[in-house]
Every structure is written in structure tokens, then in C-alpha cells.
Length: 310
Image (cartoon, rainbow, N blue to C red; front, side, top):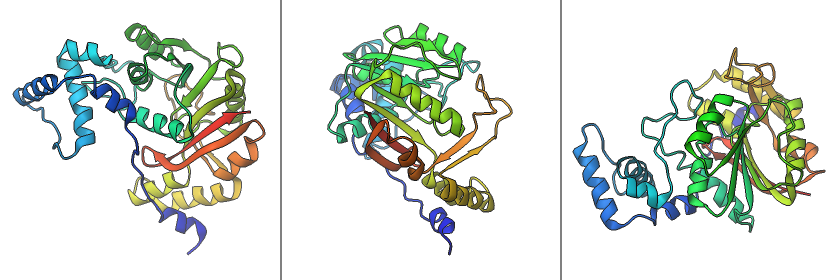
């Protein structure tokens, strides 16, 4: 069996380790609130909670439904029940939506594992309509939160819905509007999983410009675990995955043009990208220190990197 075949047969999913942001939000509601939320869900046709034994998912659903049905629960947690219309870009669309109750756990856990805390000024780069940053702001209201994205309609919707967060619309190429050395933390979820190689590099340079010295960049990308997951779940033909995997082993970076149109993105440079650790070590460590690496940690298939600006 060759190396590519071994990689494609080595899928090993990992789950969240820490739940600090969501537990913090859950702690704001009372036992009476929970009783009322459960009773309301039981009375609604077609709605049900997961089993209490599935405690992590149960907490998330209590928060989601509670914020939707009870204004005082929304006020206590700071969460907002609002789902963008279909004309507005959004990831993981739900009819009852309070934002991502998954990604904030990963960001928080990786940052804390590096001996750091989420504080100061923080940016969600490629925030779309604010699915992650809206929850981060609720969990950490003392932090100064920002979000940017090239999709103008998504930014407009998010700015109207979440006035405590500073949103801006950036172009597909740098620069952003932000000053040099402005942010303590920038996170980018499934953004470098789509840039071509040249665009990846210029945006890493822009992150270096806007992140403070010793500040952090959290980012995710497709890599070997992505291909292994897709092989396990038969998302794509094995021959195609084998070809990508061999190219990734040889070159460290693979880009596929796969979109005819994807909202406002330049689809000549925005497709599916796969980045190896070798590429990161060769291309980024002159300006960044690598402080955390989690293969396949985001969405059970994307690699997570936490880098410190030199």
C-alpha cells in the first residue's frame, strides 16, 4: 500500500475537548428557565430535545430553543435568535438560529491550551453573516469584537442584527481597513481551505500586518484528514482523492477550481484548497511561531493552526 492509500485509510475524527463559551452562556439561565424551555418544546408539534444523556447537544438545544421562545433567556445570555433570509449568505442554515454553538468551543480551547486567553480586540476574518462572532460576543462581552467579509449583503445583515460587533466589508484582495498591529486575535474558519496559493500568501501577509506582535492567528484548512474523511464517507471517488493526496504529498499545496459562482468570491482563485504541514513550515515560520496544531480538529476534518505573530 502506498503512502496516499495509507493516508486515505487513516481517518481519525476528534471532538471538542472544552466547552467553556457554551457552558458560560448556559450558566446564565436558571433551573426554572430550563423547566419552562423543556415544557415549551414538549408542547410544540414536531419539536423535541435530544436525550439528556447526550448532554453537550442537549445544552446547545436548550440554549437555541430557549433564546428563540423566551426574551428573558435571550437577555440573560446575550444570544440573538435570528436567521438570515435565503438571499443572504450563511453557513449551516437553520430556521431557529442563534449562531454557532460549536466553533466557539474549538477557538477557546485551542487558545487556552496555548496558555493564552481571548481578550482585547478580536476579528472574525471571513465572518459571512456573523454565525460565529455573534456567539463569541455573547460569551465574551468584555472583548472588542470585529467581523469582515467580502459579501456585502451578509455584512449589512449582520451589522443590523448585532450592533455590538463592528462589521466591515473587505475586497477579495488585501488590504483590510484595519490599522497595523490592531488585533490580539484573528480567527478564520474554513477560509484558507478555499484560497489558491498566491492568494493564501498575500492574506497571511495581511494578517501579519493587522495582528499585534505576540498576537494570535487561528485558522483552519483542508488537509490529509479531510481526504481521509471524504474517502471514509465516500464523498468523492477514491481515484480523485488519491490524485489530490499524491499532489499534496509532493507539493504541499493543492488548489482545485470547483465553483462556477460562489457569492462574491473570485472563483478563479477561490475553490478547494489543501495545505500540508510541510507547506506551513516552509512558508509561514519566518513571520509566525506555530504554537498549536490540531489535525482534523475543525468539523472533524479540517486542520487547525494557532500561530503567534513575531
